[in-house]
Image 1 (tube, rainbow, N blue to C red):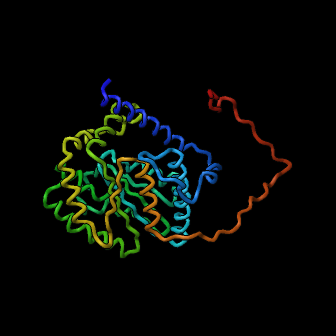
Image 2: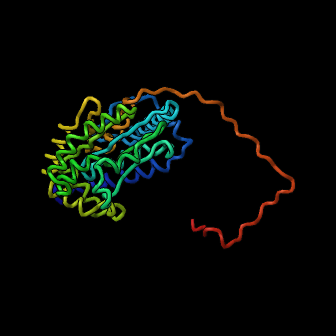
Image 3: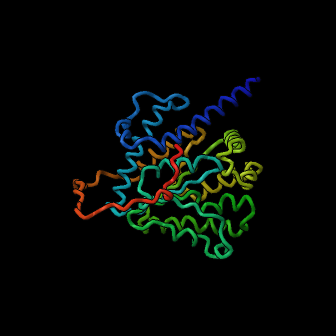
Length: 304
């Protein structure tokens, strides 16, 4: 086996291990989180983050996200976070770690499908406006109105005039959002050509991830350079004082998640929210109450 094949095999093993890590994150018992939360790292991270350090920091940051969520509710803030980047850049994984322990009634994700025929003839931003937050909400956009500057531009789904109108309109649109009281944060997840190729190959060979591949993903590989030029112009023309872009180095997924969450927490000053002491009330019992039996055929078979 050549050195290149050995390196590829090592990457595949690491990717599989990372998938197990993701499951561990989702299944970790809630009552153990406090034991794993620490004030900060006690040692520098290696080139690839040690799992213990990663989980420790992830749980600490997620604890802070819960505090931020409480503050957003308490102060009736309106928060919008855009997650943009190439296909397979890790936007979804980062969003999952942000929302993992938050209240879905406070923090929700918006991932819109391709526009309908009606939506294609509306004002471009119209389909996004109904999903903006009200007071006390956080909305995460898994791709956003910047589709026009990326996939629509590269794949020819919009005309040059429509693209130019977008670039003229989007700074004013975002300034209106900010003036209305919305906290707007924009992230671009950056990966290399080689890393995207590797992640696509992992999806091709992993039956649990094949659903993530689409014909558009395949096209994005062909048009890598066009997407790069589109991204460069997008950042140059829509990076404003009111709504700046923040670039997340995302080749290392674990580091990207931690860096993004830590940065997000820095963008919104927050503090502890005063809360009344919670006491579980005693259950009321009635002497004449008899629990009705559940028919045996209604039970799910206990196979495990």
